Image (cartoon, rainbow, N blue to C red; front, side):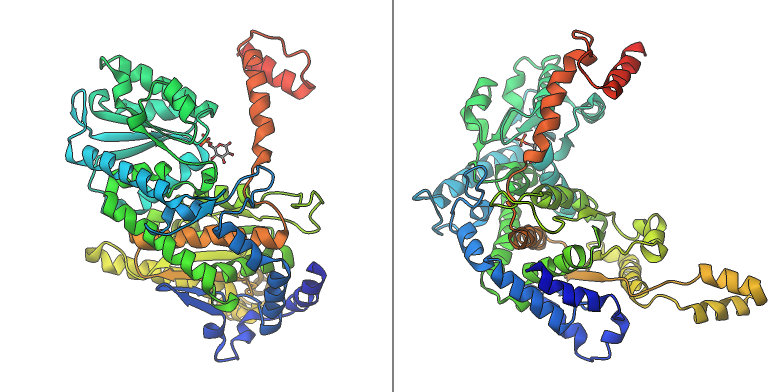
Length: 532
Ligand SMILES: O=P(O)(O)OC[C@H]1O[C@H](O)[C@H](O)[C@@H](O)[C@@H]1O
């Protein structure tokens, strides 16, 4: 399958992206409009033929059957024997989705109703802390139990009208120290968010929070709630069932913000807005499961990714939201994409013949422009850039700033594609009065190679509904890329080894055990730490 693509990638290396626009219809032909969004991938080297090859490869990968299998609750997470049903968390009330013969939607809706009642009680003050109404909510969780809700809470700041929200994830005591420092334990609620309820960082921070609260209130446990699929452990931790919001093992941690793990989002902006967030994701689900490949936004986002990474060998992908409130989107996507598709063995146990997921990274524009864009424009590596941009900002009184933001975003994709030729650079230097060797030397530094690919996702405004669409778009992109690679996007065995070794190293670091059986480097590090 990958050999077929090589014919096109070889040819693409000599293509001029600007020249492709001699076809007046290119921008439109190489774009997808769906659900009020525009995904423009025309500033890439994809052509009709290479795109058709990718669409064929998609067909050969068994994509359609796999998509159906996912939505219908089959156990496509084969290494863990689980279904992959985060889409059920946002299904319409009344929908029917079966897992092991049971319709899971009523249970999902019941949990959402319980979340709503709890969030309402916090927001209207009927749930009281030991010093009055709850003013602050701290979500203690890590990975999927942190990145999603933290990213979404920041993204939807204009909609916050509930208690303040905070996130603690790192086991580094500095994190919880700095967050709790400014809070009143009598009016703070702690949400312990952990699918497994065993993650050492989260359980350690939760205990620290309980100790902190116990210094000021007589019943610290009364201001704790749990978001988890491990109901035995939440009970063991002393959190009463009415404040435990559970979910099933068919929700992967990095796909879990649509249910209980999203409770912080619901508390911040209210259950109705949270429903809008879910409905956005649902709209993207409906689009993804029905649209033909060329009209299917997640599919084309994925095929563009495959073209750049597996096809052309560009090993990283920059995600560049020109939207300050999406500043945590790159971090969120790092887990979503790199934990999902960072594999090297296929479903059948064989090695993958091509690279799997790319390195995903990024920062919001325009900040990144003043930091790392230099390398994107003139460095030796080609880095496909994925721009995201809202047509309208929330700050009506700062429209001129939004226009500047938009202009910058468009300017970057234009500059990447068009570059600046040596001739133009020479003219610039001549205009500055240079000539001869010095003109030539200076001009060379001012050349932009151009022909650098980027895509742009435009959306009207970052509302709860729109954010739901955007996140679901990326979730489905990961699915499509995973299917084409033949890997399981829904396990994460690669995080296990370090965790096990950390447990074994703790008594060595504290000095209770010798480091004798460790390698020379680890022994040296331990000696230095102990010696200091
Ligand atoms: O929600 P938890 O069970 O605490 O897990 C938190 C995180 O820990 C792990 O190491 C996994 O790699 C992540 O996928 C997960 O989101």
